[in-house]
Length: 130
Image (cartoon, rainbow, N blue to C red; front, side, top):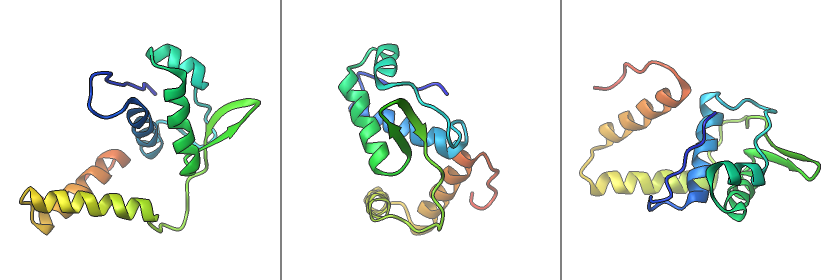
């Protein structure tokens, strides 16, 4: 999987890394048990500070997306089961909904945008909304 960051973007680099890895896991580009580059190697490859990559890895580990071992590199954690939304995810979704409302999107358009993005990431076809 190719990880890209934009050093000129407003979004911090550690968040870009976190997002790239979560998208890779969700889309199947990063499989359960797959090793990620060490923080030092990834930092060198991207031309960013080691602590930036380390921060992204710490956030991913804390959220349960990766597992860390001092003797090995980070690996993709087993996918979560149960389908319950975490409090953090509910909060993020609430903010997305609030921004959609502020931007004049109606409920159906917001739900369709969510469904389209879900299917796009999962690699499925979406025919539900226009």
